[in-house]
Length: 252
Image (cartoon, rainbow, N blue to C red; front, side, top):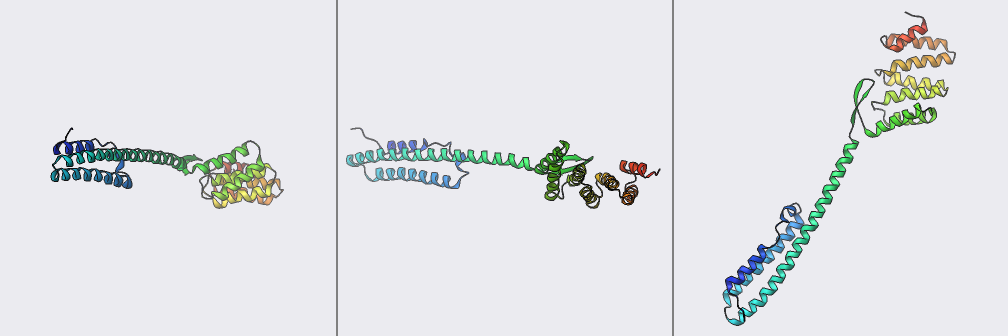
């Protein structure tokens, strides 16, 4: 019958252990649980190899050698089983890491879409969110299409939702124009007065005052119309709206 020496058996075990896949290590070190499991499996392999060496040291007769051969077969089977578990763990971890990477890549892309972007509003640079920009542009598109009622509803909703937006002054101004287009001068005046009061530094403030004067004229309120034109000329003397106000009031 074929016999194995102590050195031969030990070498076989260590060769089998050395054959364990090393490619999983790089991925496993990112997962504590998987790393721990693999380290435990490899400890078992070490223990089995040490056990064989110990038995070969204490049992040298033929019977013990046959017993060692049987245990050697069992050891090789256990090593194969452990190797399979390591491969499964490595594959599962690699798949998990890929899913996590894909998730964070997608999340990062979504967050970037939500980041404020730089836009130019009335010649001034401002940072606006994607949602507020799309909401403002949608409301303004309604106005330009002639749907003044829907435009007024959308513009009013915008200024209430984004009162600090860089678009707020413009939205309030176009809200006044939407009311005026519906021949609702009282609502138009109120909306444009909000522009003048809340956004006095906006380029739209002077135009808002001119529109207020126009509404007063349509309401046959000449006194307030004249008062508004004079206030416009005084507050915004260099604006194009002030030049129009001077023409209307007969001033040079």
